[in-house]
Amino acid sequence: MLLLHLFAFLFPMRVRAIYVDHQLQDPSASWGQFVQDFALKQQIDCVICPVAVSQGNLESEARKSRYQAFQQHLQADEVLVLAHHQQDQAETVLLRLLSGAGVTGLGAMKAIDLRDDMMIWRPFLDLSRQQIETWATSIHLRHITDPTNIDTHFDRAWAREVLWPVLTSRFPKMQTSIARTAILMQDAQDILAEVTQADLKACVQDEVLDITCFSDLSLARQRQVVSTWMMADTHYRPSFQMVDRLLNDVIHARVDAQTALFCKPYWYTRFQGKIYQLMPDQYRAKDLDIITETDIQFTMHCPVHVLSGDFTVLPQQKMGLSDQLLGQSLRLVTRQGGEKIHFYGRVGRWPLKKAIQDAHIFPWLRHRVQILYRDNAILGVFTPQGFWLAHSDACQQGGWLPKLCIS
Image (cartoon, rainbow, N blue to C red):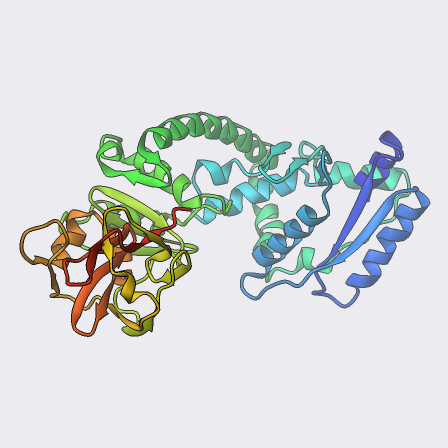
């Protein structure tokens, strides 16, 4: 309320307010009305935004819902101004320390926080709660105290009500010192970020981690690279345990080991000296059920969708399939293993598995390989790299082939 009062005075007609109603307490709607009535008197536009808080850690989920509401209502070139104060900062540092956070976590909140999706300004971050309360009282500013602020069921309230008095009785300047630690950690974080970005540029290309380059780094730098890479665009760093698992179970696993790790929302898997970060729809375990056999027909210049991707039937000047096959019902069979195929232009029959390996098709895409049959004769193979023509009686000069559509 003090922040709203001051900004109405300092920036008249340039302030908007948002009240996020978490709908977790009975009077929350009336609190929103209290804020809106005050804003109306100050000629400030105010929107009340009810949100649904997901199940789980209540404090974490409420915060996530709150920032989603902020992002939804924030307009171009606007700054989100929040009233976090020095005790909020010190509590954040201490709670993150107790949860095992590193430099980034201990940096806590920044006075000016430039994010990809918003800019946040916390002008009260150097003020104590007592200073703010004294200021509000001196100008007779009404406010509402959230009862959960003293509910020690919540970690932050416990730190505030139980731990704070014990620490300040021994270390009177503890709050200021801890808040200063956050500033020092932010400096360290900036330096660390510069080193990590340089390492990421050297080790990660197109979201693929090169193990050879990565292995030249110290373990500490490896952890930072992996942690930042795993965070991607989620804005949430993975746990220390998950970073450790990726390092030990995937990156540094035996060369012949087939390993994969799921850390929401990505799968991480290794192939030929590289680690791939894949969405679930890109990665599919080989033991999942898929359609093993289906009928298919082809028409010239028409699209065809198979497991390997989207293809288009096009005429060929060189060797292709016979025009007589167009419109016929052919069989499409998913690779089972052990198949041998006489590919056009090669001598003799080749194991399909060997051909797939030689083509460097990723293991997590090999379940998409399908064989095209007419009766019991193999006509070709659909792969994520295109259609491989087989030597058969159906081959003809100037025939047709399915061509992979490259997105």
